[in-house]
Image 1: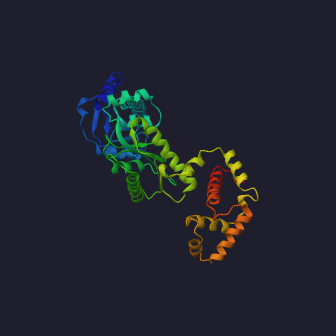
Image 2: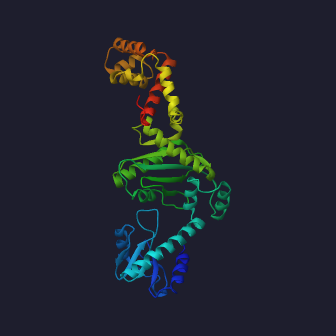
Image 3: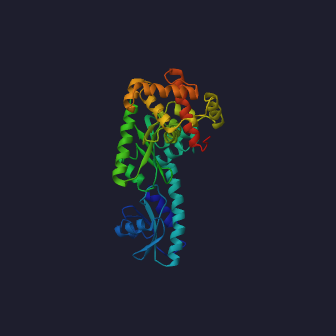
Length: 363
């Protein structure tokens, strides 16, 4: 961020008030002030005070401070006004509005991270992408992947800072705050990168977050793209990976869009079509007629690739007992799970049922 932008704003305010108005950075250094002698001074105590204020105006050492808008849990810049009275608080609030506007304008013009965030949010026209990339000297053609990191049970604002520590190069990798629970990582990859490398990166992120914050996250991974114009698609894919995984792979914390398989197709189907499919498959009895023990047997049968002997061994039952259960399932549903086509139909039906339940349709 150029201090010249801030300096231009605070100097314009000099005609309206005799108070000293300026900006400090995250280290407590005065980077702009309408009293030029203050520039370069270091106030470390102010940093602690502003961070404790959590975005509200705070009074410290005869001055009023207020953090400017930022993406991280810790502030990047804060405005200050000399004095701790109500007038100082009002001037500080007004200065913050003006400085935030200048900061936003500067970032839109010069900040690569804002440019990338606009791309994945579909907040920039396709033609403008090429123009802005050229202005920012941004490498358009390079292999990149999008990782969407979502906090599941709790929301810790320090998440973005933890991810930043893993990927500190802000000119190549971009860590973006999406919402209270979501952080996106746009990672530049080496040529010829493979999906297993993406999993290693995601695992590294998950382990670091668990170690530092002790929160549970789910990470969705989009497909590798070769041009920045494709980042929006990759970001959507990462979001879909999390949503589909929540339905079909509830035990997984890292889900790659490329590995979603048939679940991705089912997730995009209208619920009415899914209900019709279940009715057509289970003409004799609805799927709900199967008890939990039977469903457990079916899932084990699928896990063991329709191998009767192996499934019986895993269930600790005699082979004939399993055959009897499969015959019972055939009588109830009309589907013989030992037949490949029937097994596929039943597997898809189970997934469709899961999908409907996730949508609040349980009949």
